[in-house]
Length: 206
Image (cartoon, rainbow, N blue to C red; front, side, top):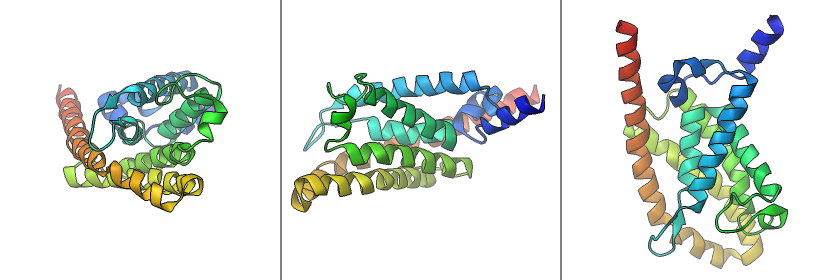
């Protein structure tokens, strides 16, 4: 019994969107943890495949999905989900943007961003667990922090491959898309939290 209890505590997802939406997710079995991780990788795959015709270059929803996943799952589950997603890609499954897959693709220009996904999911998840993201300003801050955590290794790696000038051009090209995603996140995350909280309180009163 004590072993089972310790396992459940290790797989807890405290103070996250998923626990607010589904209180039973406060403590997860190992099987449920893995099922949620697999579902999360499906979300990340879908976000990578959705190309939005945005000026000056098309963009995907992948960065948005990684940060939102941190709010939804919390630090440990979201980081484990992104790590599983990268493992799927390393195995050759078509989970990345376009038709790219395998270790050769992962070592290419986007390698730094992929590494940043894991860190961003954990850091954003941890901050959300601590109370960030309940209001529009703090949710916007979460998306900014997540984007910075992803961009740092992404831009460093890219600059080593293509040079600083080309990297600067790439970085500036997706700033409008970044502003749009941040604005959407600042609206969606607090709205989900507040709606779930209202439902949670109404259930408690009953």
